[in-house]
Image (tube, rainbow, N blue to C red; front, side, top):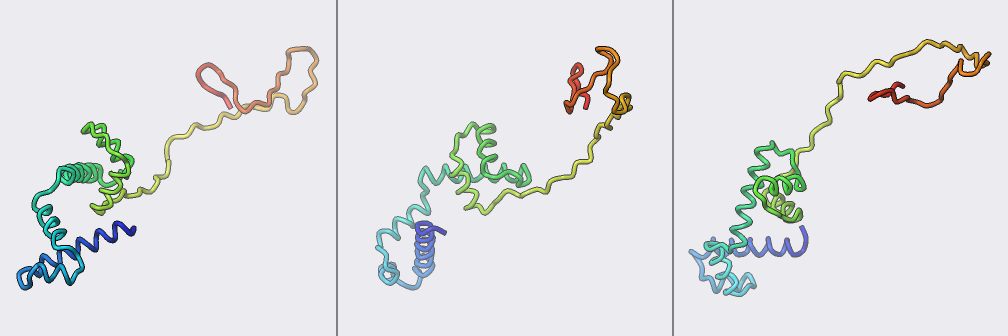
Length: 159
């Protein structure tokens, strides 16, 4: 965790601890012991019950990310989820934001193993050795030799 994120998480834990102990002790005493301002605790408590528009937007985005993750069996990472959000919902979201929200949700792309290819392969056509290494020609245009690895014939290549 970075220093700012770690501090935010620690502060949130402190506020949650104060909230748990308010039934037994006064808030002013708990805030003083924790070394935080009482107003910051009350601001946190008010925001917890009344989320900001950004928090509401991020919650909706998290639900859409989870929908994509479950619908596609967790194979998409944050770049593809970003593209999926744009195509499906028309949302233009920064990839860093999608990455952060996926991290908060604790979801990651499932890396799939490559499947071996057992497809049909063309059998090589082997021509007979007509020249048999006799390159001396008795007349012009009787023996043709090339060193190209393939020859384009129509829409196909002969190797």
